[in-house]
Length: 168
Image (cartoon, rainbow, N blue to C red):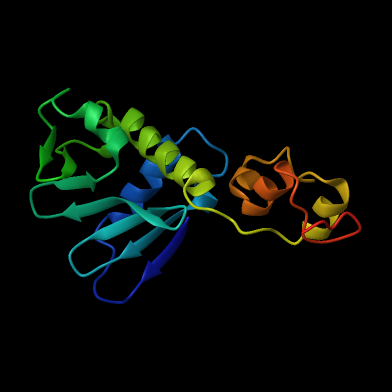
């Protein structure tokens, strides 16, 4: 887990909550994919470079907030999970690791962010474009990250822009 503190306040428990949340994720890469950024009014847990969970702590309790669509199904499962405006909120009156349904919710949020990272935006091409052109197909076909490659689509339709098979 990476931590970014802009110096506005001491930790107040954000890092410990973030560590527990990350430990709940069923992925070996979770610690590298998550980052905690301390803010003036709370802290944000970034997953794959986008805000996934916002943590607020006041004198009474801690609250997690997320706008991920996958968290919607947990609203109303227990009294501590509810929707406020367009945000799913989880009140943590007990320690995070004891809170019911939080583990499943955090895993769903992580998986949603991971899918968005993999498939959410397009990739023009990678540094293997000449090898792909020569092979007339994507040479990184086994890696799901490269499914969003735009040049791969051109290759599949027979348009080759580089290498010995250039035809466009």
